[in-house]
Structure formats: structure tokens, C-alpha cells
Image (cartoon, rainbow, N blue to C red; front, top):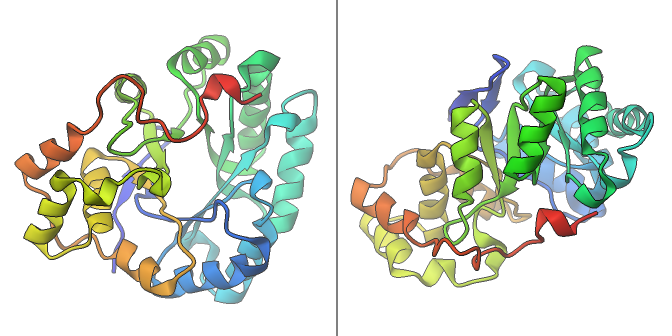
Length: 278
């Protein structure tokens, strides 16, 4: 199976569908990532705060898959923004992952109350320039945060990884990203099970029409929107199911029906507001 890739604004390619290890326990991460690699995933998304980088690294080492066939993301945590902490943080992450560099390094949250995300971004630019990360980006940055880092550094992030699912589509950020050639990565692409996404007629009707599960329909919706997604599961049958989304296409009507599920008032958010995480 060939997973489609998207080209980032720095010219590097990223697999559009990957495997996320958010909340995957450290003691099962190696097995889970090994199974993901076995069934065909080549894009792994982790973070320092997840506490499972070692498991990701062990699975990669045992897989025998050439490094240039893998895309690995990790992230700078909120308490490492100041001074030279970002340099120490990437060194620690690379040591745990057993890698010489990552394919994508993200500032995990802007932590605006601390007013140090511009400094963190400057340090991450340096990390890229030293070859420790091929591409760099941010996560959970709102438009004012994005505009500020670009204005003060002149460097546009390759991606912004944000909460995004049918009930909460963050259209303002999406519009800014399109205008500035920034790719959107959707975390919580299936709503984290916090609302009955899989019981909504727009989803269930499309699933029935294509002989797919509601989860597969929502992942397909993301892919057709141009989002990068990395659903999480520790069950191999679900890993396979989440990967089996390239043999059908939602019709314009089906796609529009799912796209209309966001009321536009922010009520669909299931995670934390970026201004509240500091």
C-alpha cells in the first residue's frame, strides 16, 4: 500500500496518514509502533511529554526499515521554552528515539501567558539549521501566535498541528494556513470519542453507502480536506482499518454534509484552549 504524501513549504514530503502515540502507555508503545510499522505505517507522531519516545525508538530500531523511509515527529514541551532549554530538549528526545534527527520538530503549545513562544521558535529554527530536524512547525498555535512568530523571525512553520474534527474545524486557522502555505495536522481527528460522531447521519449514511466504518469515513473526509492525520489505537485490527481508507472517495454531497457539522461557535472543542495551557 502506498500512503499519499504532501509537500511541505520547505520542499520535504510528509505521509498524509500516520500513527499517533498520544496516551499510548510507555510499556506498550514498542509493541504498538512495531505493529503499526508491520501493517504499513511509515509516519509516527510522538512528543516528549508523552513519555514514550524510548518505545518509539526501540520499535524503529527493531523494524529494519531504512531511516529514509520513515517520518518521525516529536515536540518541545512547555517548560523547555526558555534559554537553551530547547537545545537540551531536542538532544534528550533524539537520545530516547535513538535517532540523529527527526523529520519534524514542533513547539507543542504556545503558552502565551509565559510570552516565550517566539524565543522557543527561534531556538527551533536553530535546531533545524543544525540538521537535528528536517522540518519544523508548531502545534496548537492560533492565528495571532502564528502571525507573531512569522513577523518576528521571518520563518513560516511547515505545519500547525491543531485539534480538528467534524464538530470543530478551526476554519480561521485553516484559512490562514492556506494563505501561507502551512499544512494542517489534525489531532483528535475522530473527536477522541467525546461526542457521538459515529452516530451522526452524515457519517453513518456515507459509511453505509461505501461499505466502510464511520471512523474510516471521517478519516477519508480529513484526507479529502488535505489534512494530515495520525489516529491512535493499540489494537492491530483498528490499525489496519484506519489504513484502509484509500480505495473510496466521498461524494461532494457526502463531503459537504460532514463539513457542515461544525456549528462555528467553538462549542465542538473537546480539548484545551491554547490560551489556557501555560
